[in-house]
Length: 248
Image (cartoon, rainbow, N blue to C red; front, side, top):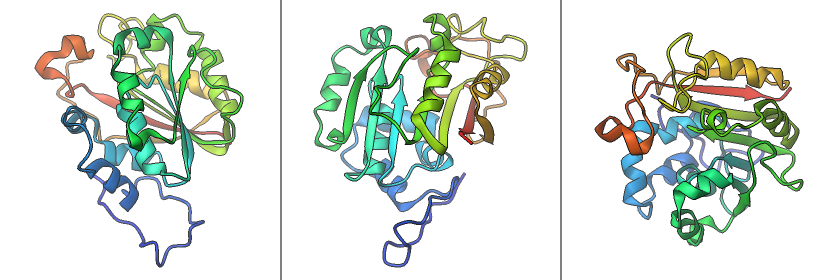
């Protein structure tokens, strides 16, 4: 686990780049904020948001996007970390909007979400033209959904590449499928094989910059459905891979 640390605002130049893997004060404060919803706090144990956001180098003032935002768990954390000088494009395709109901709209009404732009677009072309030169694009526990939704993933990954600035990060977190399963269990178990994601994203021009191990669970048999509606008391225990890609 990463240790929370970071230079104080009085000593660190505002232009200092974030150090990937270091839990900054901004990230710690965002996750520990007392006004976060209890339902989100319950999910923290399985998602390790401090290490996740640190691994992807999220910092105040950044322009970022959250693809497949769902009910907005990750979007809100991003909004809190990037702060008033940053911006978050939070995208949901029609099929995901059908699952989240009114919860997404309610969250967007919270004051902490005022720097979030709601984006209702399909994953094939997930971001509007004004979302450009982004610092990071995250896709948390959603890449596998793009399979059963019939998304043109090559087109999606190229669109992410185009939206990022040089050196920008494409962060992917997802449930691990067994070796050899590829995309075949994307709908039945809501999992995808890590190597498939690596190959597909690299094909769009990205380089693989890092692989996080903090969400690994070697005891997971990877033969059960980990979707929120099916996982039951196993929710949050799936073996997960964390991949950091960069645009050269």
